Image 1 (cartoon, rainbow, N blue to C red):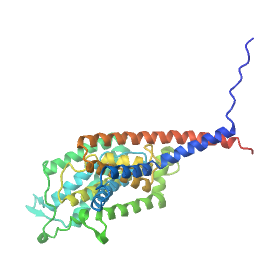
Image 2 (image 1 turned 90 degrees about the horizontal axis):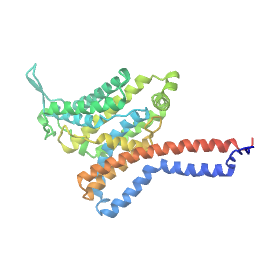
Image 3 (image 1 turned 180 degrees about the vertical axis):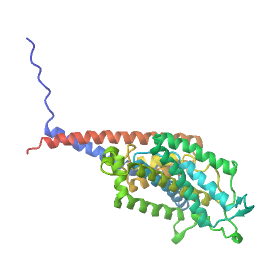
Image 4 (image 1 turned 90 degrees about the vertical axis):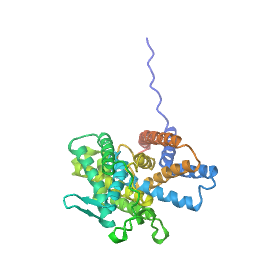
Length: 365
């Protein structure tokens, strides 16, 4: 006669509550990972270089962080919706090339004249180019059901190739314009300092406020989170899924084009290779800032902190004199670690939700 097997004793309510508190602490650390990384990075690079926190270097870092933030804010909307945009770096390069072509004079062959549009017209046209590329991304993804990774990866090459075709592979060395032609002032985007604050920072701050209001105060923001969290449920509740998905790629393209204009303005020159690896910086900033690759999560505050971390990492590696090749290795490693952290956070959150439910179920009614 075989002895009856005794079932394992359920965990005691006290043990379950302890585990729930432990998982809550771990989840809190995951939520603060970007801020922890930022503080640690400041301490490490300050110890490695006395010039790291000097005022000139801080201003330079702030401008570069602002450029990364502009692209990352557009990427945030895409990731919250559950997508990804690998074409933003190439869009930035294409935007700068279009600006260079327009500022140096656009030859109209059919009329045998050269047009010199004003700077505001150049900015509008370049942002429109970025929006057009984003629209193509959105249409390919929504109408032809191409996965976002593949669609935007292909557009990365298409946009870069168009920039090379327009420029012939060369650089536009002088974007200062000509007073007689009325197209001066482009450099203000990159090196202007209204009220003592560099223009790229103003642009990033205004864009951040706008995106935050869109995400928190508008139906479009609620649609983004709903569609990113559960697309089918959102569709059944009346969310225009395809229009929202297309819109975020259009916005992402506009942000990338604006960043490309700032880069070209700061350098007063445009190259078709500008913006390389900026897509990796943007994705890293968004995910490090708390967004989920699966969609439905993400905040402007977290993205800005993530952009600061990525920007400080890039600048710190340069200041410490590390080889450019090692910089590429480290940035790639950081991207992988960021994704691993995102996966770990999701796993702990699911476990924490399960344990919390178990603990709540054992409370006396």
